[in-house]
Amino acid sequence: MHALALSDTLPGIAPVERPLARLVGAGKIYGTGEHAVSALAEATLDILPGQVTLIEGPSGSGKTTLISILGLLLRPTSGQVWIEGRDVAGLIERDLPPLRARNFGFVFQGFNLFPALTALDNVAMAIQMKDPGAKDPRGEARRLLDLVGLGARGHHLPADLSGGQKQRVAIARALGGNPPILVGDEPTAALDTKTALSVMELLRELASSRGRAVVVVTHDPRLEKFADRVVRVEDGRITSA
Amino acid sequence: MWTLARKLLLHDRLRFAVAIAGVSVSVMLVLVQVGLYFGFMDTASSLIDASSADLWVGKAGNESFEFASPFDERTFYKVASVPGVAHAERVLMNFAQFKLADGGDLGVQIVGIETAPGTTPLLAPWHVIAGDVKRLGEPGAIVVDRTEYPKLKIDHVGHTTEVSGVRAEVVAMTRGIRSFTTSPIVFTDLRTARSYMPGLGSDAVTYVLVKVKHGVSPDWVKAQIDQLPHLAAYTTAEMSSRTRTYWSSRTGVGAGFFTTAVLGVIVGFVVVGQILYSGTLQYIREYGTLKAMGARNSMVVRVILAQAMISAALGFVVGGVLAVGMQAAMAKANLTVALFPSLYAVTLVVTIAMCSLASLLSIIKVLRLDPASVFKG
Image (cartoon, rainbow over all chains, first blue to last red; front, side):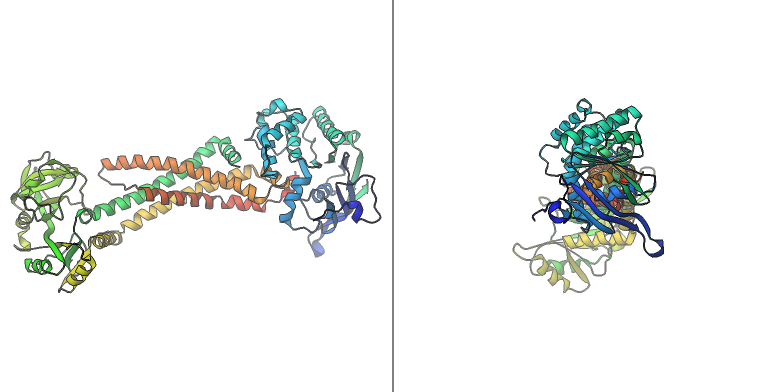
């Protein structure tokens, strides 16, 4: 199927740079009737290559719902989600994993590394899971660990790494399969200030020199200096972008 | 996938050891219990299976091989004259009292066979390890099994005693011939057997063993014999099967052994299921991360199944070795554990099925795992 560019399909919107992903009026309502709760409403957002986007807001404001919908982990109850030049909001669950594998890498506050696997194995396994036909997952994993500055630590188990090193491994894992968008859910929350800043520097570098779009949910205003854009979410609505 | 599964299992070595122990005990129980059952059944039909007869003819209505009713010699001649019969031999089988060296008596199962110089009877002692079985035709000559020596208080070939007050001399010793009834089997000549069991009459016969003529169907001869009054003929395979079925169903030994084997499978199922499930819960966020990153459910399920298969394979090997050890230990107690390739093959299939089923709960857990849950705390 021919993939359409977003600018070709959304009349009236002509971004300077073609977005890698776009939310258009996306909303999410949990429950029905009297028990319905709106977690997100009318969210419109472009994710551009080379940019770091911070998503800020108080707890329960809808940040997690926003990145879950953006990362195709949650289907919106209204609106559109544009990835690879098409609206994928209506796709069924079984069609989403390959889209996620091609387009997203995720980084979490708790790292979520397999404790039984070395840093190298954690990254290689993710590459293989994303693409079972990958030619040389371990070679690619080595390259990615080098990229995040952990080439010499490939054979260490997560338990033998510091928090910052674990998060770098997680970032290397997220880069497996070469996805254009990295989504981080408070990736620096479990780290001390110095380490947190170095991790953000790495994400900033990946955006600036490697053209990745980086989307980070955070409560930490000190990270704003790394961002091209700060999106505030309050009461389920984007209040500033 | 296999590497991940192996490393996840080995990461917690104690838990892995418990899983393997669970599968091993399960495999050993299945092998030993089913092996014991087949060992008992082999013992029950060993006399029949060792014969070279085509047909066994007994009195109609006999339920048990060992407790068969006798008939007289006229019937033997009727059978011997049926068309298609090449050769017929008489067997007299019943119980008698064996005089022990300390003055006591022990019930033994007398098997009287036709012996003649220069010929091999259709039923004869096998696995002879000492003495001269050719002397069995001599009056009072008997052959007993080495495993029964302690019970019979015999310590050498040449031992003399009495059976039902009649002289008996051990002329040969066999290895591994035992009876399901636990009464020692005593081979002797037909005439001696009759002297040991005078109450049955001087021409008593319990079975007629038949060898059919070359080119004649045993089933056809069997049908001819079945037309004779009060007689029933069975091929050797049928007789063996009837005997096994009789002991298996009448004694409940089959149900007993198989119930224990099933319990073994249940134990293995519970242990492996619990270990895999707790392992899945331990790594649930990591599995969720994989799903979030685009790993299909099938990939994650395969990792869990691979863990189940590794547990099954290792547990099977360890359990199989343990079963061989148990077999050797039980042989010292005169118990036969029949382990054979098809039993191992079936047990392997059962083990794989058990471990696969045990992983179901874990599989359901990861299938239901919402990848978005990785963003929640």
